[in-house]
Image (cartoon, rainbow, N blue to C red; front, side, top):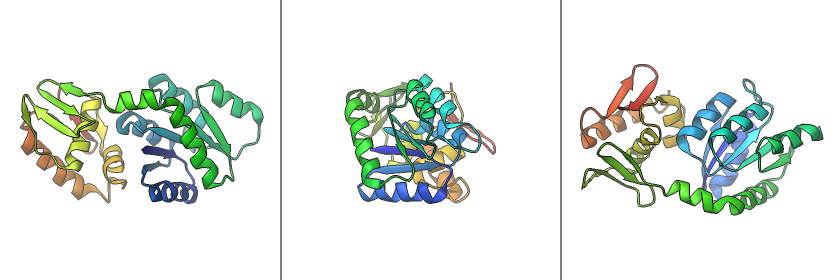
Length: 221
């Protein structure tokens, strides 16, 4: 399961990430609402754990924006005790909430509950094939094709291509790609990303991936 944690407190973010990774889940941590929205669009998590007290965009606004674009389950994490804020979050489309300080077993139970309720829709989204011009990928089988030819992509190259194909023609930033593929910042994963992108281009052919200097990449229209 792919879990996106949108939380500005690094200690809480690390605690949640370590706990779920110990159970074999794939976890990415975003420290701001802006970064969290971007990761929701490009990484396509199975569930979002969302703090309300973010430094840039309020958690309620993030909830509204996510729900306007996706049916991904949202669990609100909040230290606030005002009932009307929790109710507002649920009204905007959040699926559940936990109040800080929370126990990890409780959070894990909440995540299991919301994903059980939405599993049918999530599975359908994750297994949907993607195609753009003569490129296609089968996310369920982790296979990519150019025409009828299967491309010999590594796991990382496949994830990069999938991110690009989910939004053809739109910019995928280096930050979003680095966090999604390696769980690291764009700075620390710079060389890894450049090497994998170069290899991906050689395998799929010239003209498919455009570089936006200093920002990221996009799949050519």
